[in-house]
Image 1 (cartoon, rainbow, N blue to C red):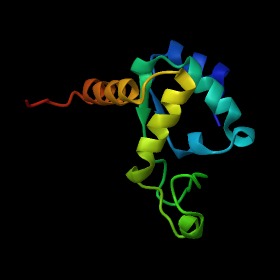
Image 2: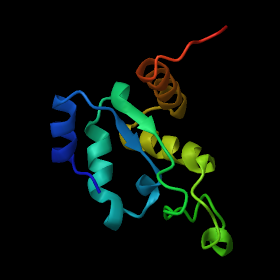
Image 3: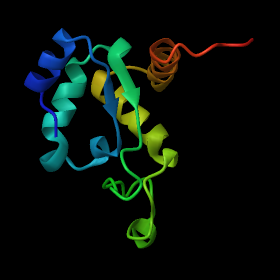
Length: 113
């Protein structure tokens, strides 16, 4: 997983960060990633699902009996956003809005009102 030091190097290059289900793992496995996310500016954060068959440890999101058969889908993204908000001590809505705006800006998506 990423570290704060890796994040700082990529920030200097102007990269955005795709944060996925790995963030939902327990602290002993994801602690370095948690620290990195705390230091990544909100305007550089995106959310992603990783690969369909790389399951995050997210027993709070997927029932344990279904975990082995589950696919990594966009259904976990609200939990990823909630975890980012928790780590950055921000309201979930602020992170949701930032991720949306980052996506629109990065991919030059047209917005229709």
